[in-house]
Length: 281
Image (cartoon, rainbow, N blue to C red; front, side, top):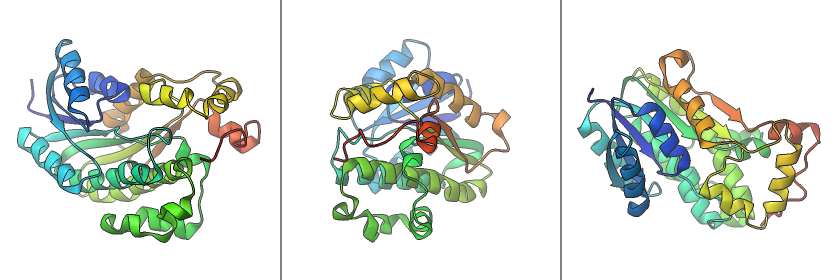
């Protein structure tokens, strides 16, 4: 076994599925806000033969994120970083969505830009929601992409009273994820590493099931029956794409955002699907 380290932030279904794909022969550092969830996922992976260590991390806390990056580097060369942590509009307030999904991702990209090993690669799990309301005005997109991380949540259009709902906060955050991956890829490139995003549609996970059973459930059922795929996705499908983007066959791909939503965005663009059935709060 090599001493390479794969950091998986978020021990949910997608994070665990990706860990299975890329963790063989590496130490998997599994980080999560919930110690209980991290330990349960680690036990499951160890039972399948993986080398796993855990760390409790709140990605909305800069010190915790930087400490995670340092801990990862102390274990060995950090060759893969997979950031899957996030909260949904049903689970969290507008403020919490902004702090976890937007600011947290930006801080992860900053911290691991200093420790990613040459030849390494990173993945951020964004969302089709980032494509749903985009593109935003050019000045908004420029600010989301380039504003210093410490100043991000001070942007006027990111104030909760301007956003209006956790649904819009989530869409803005996920668009920011895509844009910041694009710009952060330059810093990662200086270390000989690559960075990409994946924007999944509805993937059946506990988080998604919260959404499906919430007030937007009927709209999601309409999405399922209208999109080209005619179904929702699975964590394993995201893991397959992640393994490709993290691996050598994707060596010329960096700063990209791969949309895998079963055709939902296409249906929105053509008018076959409308956002109107979905509540805005």
